[in-house]
Image 1 (cartoon, rainbow, N blue to C red):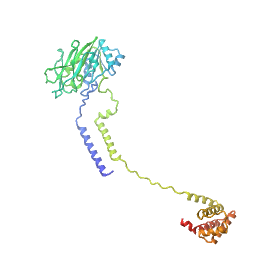
Image 2: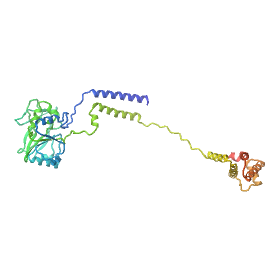
Image 3: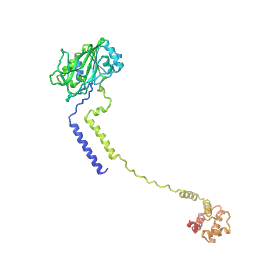
Image 4: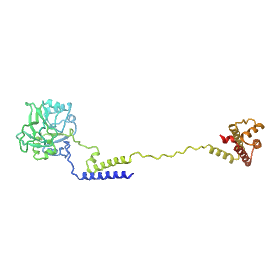
Length: 406
């Protein structure tokens, strides 16, 4: 690695260490996610409400199944409580809940807004609260029942507030009001309806556009707990209360192992450092490098080695006569291909032409062919005779000017 690359890696590593130190020492930020989960202790969880409800109610049951499925499999009576940022039952499930209420039970739903079919069934309509001139985004809520605490309670962290702009005045009873924040201990003026109750068959339905009343943040800000306690008075605590945990924004179980890493600062930053380190490695070391090109040696001509091997086998086996015959045949082929003379008939004229073309004298040519005839006539030859034959042929060929000119 070059010095420049090492410098970059050092600077990045130092920067990461500084960022990690700052992140580890800074105060942990609050999680403002609106989970409404009964086991969550974050501001918009409902851990406190769950504990208080268990304290005042005879029987509480957490239902983690869809209400359509739960009501079909269980014959229950009492109060069914839903609260979440958004709840959408669907046609069949809503019909099942309304039939259950019609049998003399109580349905309580707290959500920012409601599905159209539920509002049409109860002859209601909702509209978002006008936020003009409410720069601090603060609201106050209060209950209207004189037997309860009717003080105005402050809430300063809404997202969107809805109110009922249309109600069935013959069937609907107003339970709670909402308006922009007017100041501590001041009554709500120009109020808007945000909680109503209405009979339905033999039972009763209560709707609230303020689900935040059941969250830790609202209840723990004194004296807001009085408001939530007033809402609890509308629940029949002597009979079973079924609390829905299915329609919740927050998860009940975290199946992903990444939740453990990202929920712990040390593990989270170790995970981030590994990812950043891998990216740095890819940038500086993952680029393509030129690989050495191997030297490929050309294929060797094995013909000569093969010929020598065969010749040595013949020589070591004592087959001198066979070697001599091959040598003579190869010489005659040389005369035909190089000197362009026919070797079918070897006579006086052939030897004269051969001597002239090969630049040899006639006597040396006759001596060579006389020795060749002697070898052909013999059935066996000695080492010295084989060497003499080879010497005569090589000497004859060395005088050939045709060969050197080609």
